[in-house]
Length: 266
Image 1 (tube, one colour):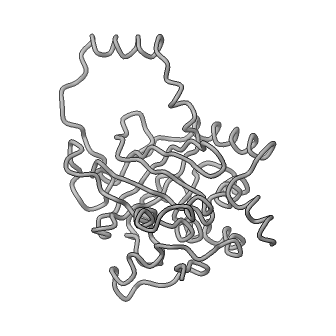
Image 2: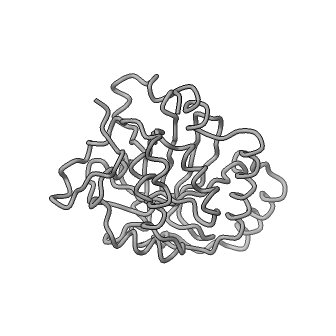
């Protein structure tokens, strides 16, 4: 595939295809079953009073929530903390594609009405990443490993639609900050978002993510990571070497194995 064609197709789809896929995404999100986190926090505090509930209902009727209405793309993956990669969690992303090079996502520890907001992620294309100063790039994790391994999924979409969505995210980067330690497998979740924000990273080798998290995620969402990975082999030819692939290399022991087509940028 020529470089010009790849730049046109590899980040995001346009026109009729975009409208079709977005419609499928919105339909799927509206029909998805509720899924809780591995360890979803029970927030501290008193139950809402009748007055608070009435005020909330009034705000829903009379106030504008337009900035929230574009978050229609639903993705689920796994995040390790860059400074403590054994601290891992399932992350439910609700994303708004602002333009073909930039998306913004809010993160939760589940997809139900009582899910807790745990962080934010910004996603940029490879061309935008190349404009960043070198000292800024340390905050942005690569996505090819998540995509080609089947770790990152768009639940409830038809396979063809999900593959098209993931094709648009190939070679992209994310900047993710978690503010609430909820959604982890082993840790007891905090009842409040305590402490400093923490920079999350991506898994770029097999053997890094906790297999219990994968099993729980797959069971809850009715997906199969292995099957998804096999279905995405066709995306390997789109993969470019990325900066940050080796950021966590060697921190998970001898079980680490390379993911085909996932390479550190020289």
